[in-house]
Amino acid sequence: MAFCIALIHAGFVPALFVFLVWSLPGAIGMYGLSLGVQRMHEILPGIVYALLSGLNASTVGIVALAAVQASIPLVKENVTVLSHVYLVGREVYQRQDYQDSRYSWCLCGIVL
Image (tube, rainbow, N blue to C red; front, side, top):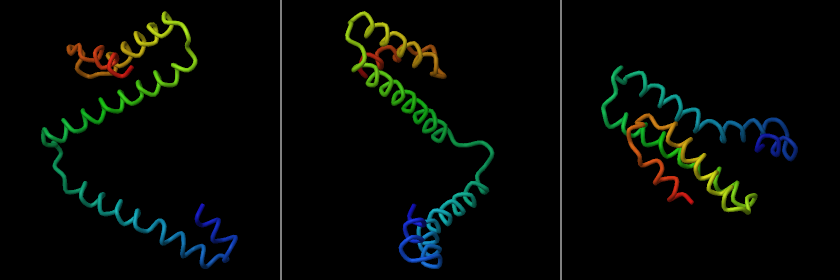
């Protein structure tokens, strides 16, 4: 969008400059990240797996929260709200890798 605005107001050469200024820092950062990933071992440390598992769980929680918050203005009956709580809790529980944990149901109640 910055390229289009600069192209309309100033022409092609300034728009190209704006594009490079806008995108070059991200490109350099991604290239540096790719160099770092090349030097990683094939087996990651346990803390990395814990971080990835936590990110996965938080993403599931955010999606569940968004689903519940989107349905609340549309639902006026308590029975329907309870059925949504049950469905969201069941979905959160099924998405977890560690299904022996029963904390997903508690998490769903806290979200509401």
